[in-house]
Image 1: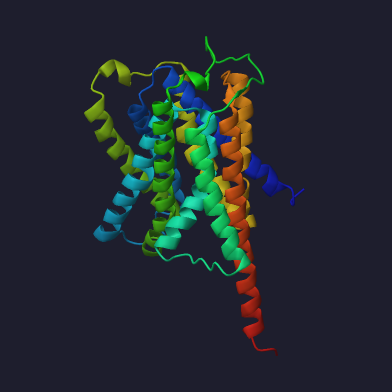
Image 2 (image 1 turned 180 degrees about the horizontal axis):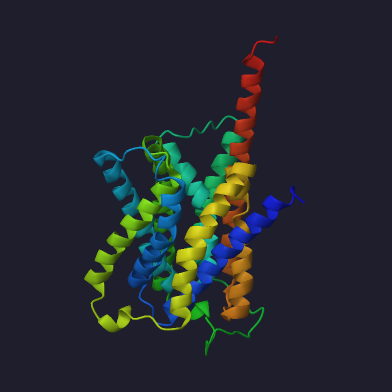
Length: 339
């Protein structure tokens, strides 16, 4: 049973992520302002994490210098606030399926950014290097397919719930709006990838992970509040009722930020980051099923083909990275003197 536990947990993580995309899209379709949504989500996440940060890490945390605080502030702004704001706009322009599909290119984007910053290397003459290169090309091909090719529709199911009166037919979305949404989705993934790469450097200066996460949520809530106030000043738009908007905010703030953070940490500790990254396509499959059944989405062939290319790109880069680590480990073992 213990051997199966990590597989159950990664399935839970990807299901939670899929539900997050679906609930966010439902809230936006019901008139929720994206910028206000991000503020409420981050504020609620901060309130949820503060007690745990005080209980588990406050006494053991190192002093926070002004320079490190500025780094965390900029990291929060680029990797959380901007990424979430842009992702939300992209989701409004497109569909939950596209949002989940583009998530599969996040590990590839992260690798590419790490390559530019010389954190990673690419040796084209090796099998691992070729696999990584194929992954990057497949990722670019998948993103292009999602943006520029829709193709025939796959009408799997037509019923839906959650109070919708019409289907979300992607053909009704203008091509310019769809391409713009795809670009915004990829841009948000670039910000998230940059956040992942730079986060490692900041954690060296401030290793208290829980306080680090809580502080990022707090700073992000302030940043998103300023942006929301600048864009939306109508008080009525800020009011929350007992509807899908409140459910989406509570779910994203508590379940996604709070519970998923712990589950991700647990999986990485037990099986490593590669194992977690390999489970990413599950979110796409779950999102497609739920968006068709619950939201009445009509999926296009272009979305499916683009998603497949992104998954191929993901697995190709992950395989190359895994093969590279195995080669490095074997070399280190051979270099060790025998006793």
